[in-house]
Length: 176
Image (cartoon, rainbow, N blue to C red; front, side, top):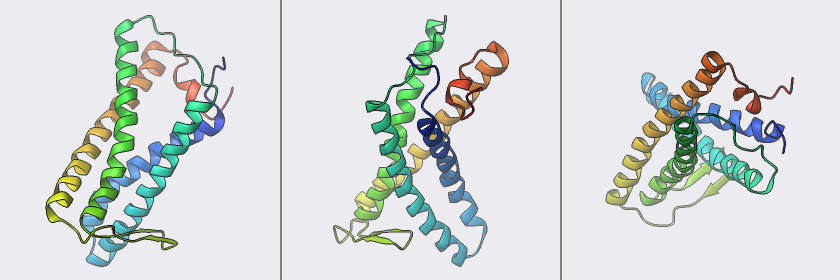
């Protein structure tokens, strides 16, 4: 069994993490400027959300077919259980939140434009009811995802600073 995660998998981890944070921040930054900037950022948010879905699928496939390191040996059963639970919730939320964003667009009778290169037309004429449900779940799911991302970061820093173990090194790009 390898000690580190494969380099490409680690790259996907950090790219997905950065993209999640950027997508979350975009929703607040876009409100600070005029309608023109708001519209541009909204379109970028949609395209980056689709990119996020593709990257998550790629990461999941690599995780399922690739050779991953064994679980980190932690003497605390509580920390091991907590880490496992947080990872499951991160995966579920990473999958569901962007899909709910796309569901919102389709429920409202809108298409999705991927960086102006690929246009996916609407499937329905739209429903304000289902659109409202999808966007509400998308929004609260994003808050939950950010909370678990923060918890994940705090736990990694706890391992690095307090416990001084090699947990964080398993996902770094450097192999030293």
